[in-house]
Length: 156
Length: 366
Image (cartoon, rainbow over all chains, first blue to last red; front, side, top):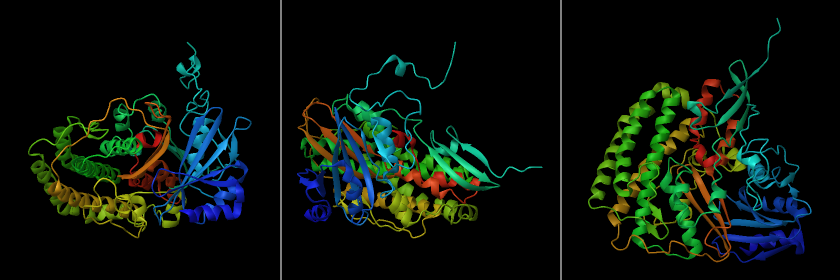
């Protein structure tokens, strides 16, 4: 388990730190600087095949992004935790490195409104293009605009 | 006269071949697909948001409708997640009951796949046949849980009811019949059927490189030659106590993906037989409070569902409800393969390609 941390800390130095995980086979690494996400992903790509899932947690006003990586040849999981704050809800996209991240990042953009810089096709994925707001945010309020949304421009 | 080089065709969102509401936009030149774009989200029901407003014991009816073709697998996944987070150890009988129910549900799900796949190839009879076999198991699920499509059988700490008396004879009788049908009738119906082979062999190849790039899991991955099954590699429930094989193929075409499911049904039957034989006596559930608080932690669980590796990641904050629940849907990743697998295929094969991935949109859109 420590092997994955050593691999990352060799390249990124003090920007990464290991945290306690309560899941078996899981290595939990916290990345303190979101600008290094691409560099970290390049290192992780050497050991892991896919982005298994991208878990965004809304601790308002900051967001916590948990990138869960998985491999086809082992049962190990690596979780990379990055925080992004209210100054700028954006982070570099890793979908050029992990192609499997493409739709997961689109989903995070759709439901949480996080911008992924350099994403090849950053559109909403589950909700319609003109949906008002990002519903998985904790401060999302169901307004009349949302309640009466039909997706059609109807006039009666 | 000027000729249009290619034109755009919308398949879906409401189309019998898309197995739900799923839209695929293809640019075709003559009869060949040049470009394919998928569009999902028509069945989005905000299940992750609903989870944040529900007690841990109160989410089962919602989780049932995630992948409505294999509802028990979804229930077991969520139950395992809550039990892991709350440190609940289920009794051995409950683990065996869950294993048996999971495998029954897997057979039912694969039978639906075989039927609808056969129908998409052009063989309407196949759906009637597989639904007939599925009904045998559906009656068993109904006998055990009282429900059919959405049984709501699992709960925190075990299952709602014990197996009724004499159910193991019923299950044995049903799986014997299904095994016999698969080994004889289905062989002639699908595997020795020249038309079926012509439509599926060499169609829509998803190779290992593509699997590893897009994150495809489940039978689609095993059809491309990667031997991996979470039931074998990270045994949960009582999969480490039963003996079964993981079928693998090298071809990666629609036929191989079909064959994976056929072989998996036979393996599931093998698992059910062993689990029924070893089914221990004792409690089928331990009592857990209806409203319980889970301390702040991050819990991750993944299991092998009929469509691939499904996972749930739950963030709790000491409250009676989850702070965040993220569901990793296997088909969400698998279905992206269509954008590449369809290119170069004929329009008539598009339907076969979609069906061979076995999408259930309830799971994709969540």
